[in-house]
Image (cartoon, rainbow, N blue to C red; front, side, top):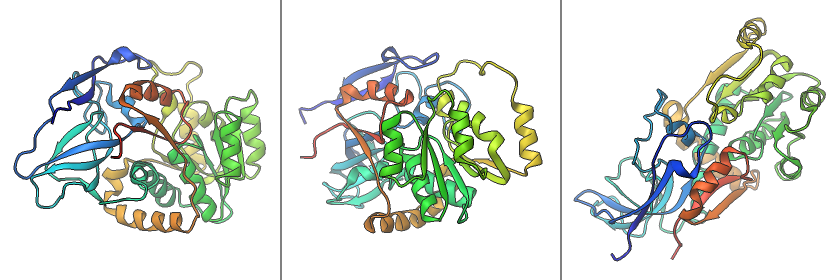
Length: 342
């Protein structure tokens, strides 16, 4: 092949918010598969908030990205060349080749998507990690019951939008929190939330208290910061809090200013017997992916789930899109189209 492999590597570790200088675009030779391997060409790349944590050299649930190594990320790829009997050229697969055009795999962990999937990029969103996170976090940890009040922040993101819609299917009142009038309108008019509040409003805490006049039974935590501060006094006895992320804190270089809230949080958890549980979706629930995929596929086919994708064209725009993601500039699931479909 005359084409080269473009890739984006971690050039330096960010202090605070990442910048363009923390990344470097390189061009290298396309790797060639050995026996038992396949060469994958990435068509779509998922950008997700967890990637910010992987840029830090700090202990976490996964190893950090090494300096000068390709940034991690889920991809939807086509098999470009195969020396593995389990895969044919032209097949589509869900892989984890990162921020680059081409990757090599021995087949382990690849999810087959068929020869001509209808919406291949959905495997990075509603049918992939974000949808799976929403489904298991809400249903297994949140355990919503008809009549419960469910609050979810980042309400138009791929996780929050799915959480809210599943909660509505379970007969709950759903209060979303998003940034800006357009996103809030989408949450109510398209996603079917009962209410959506702009967290940028000066009186956001008062608006949340008014919207949750019977308290909060489930708070799906993926943001943290001032949203949780407003949620905490409204939690009902026996409330459940699934925790999958804290995007408001990912760029922080120190603890937030102000009074120490830890004692108030622990007291609330104790007095109101609240369940607050973090989870890592594939580590904790990977064995239940088929259950999720079957149910979500049915809901999509029946028109019971709405899904919005924020598609950005080109590897050259990947870093800007990622920085914007951490600032809340995306509207829907952020996906980079790295290469053409032909």
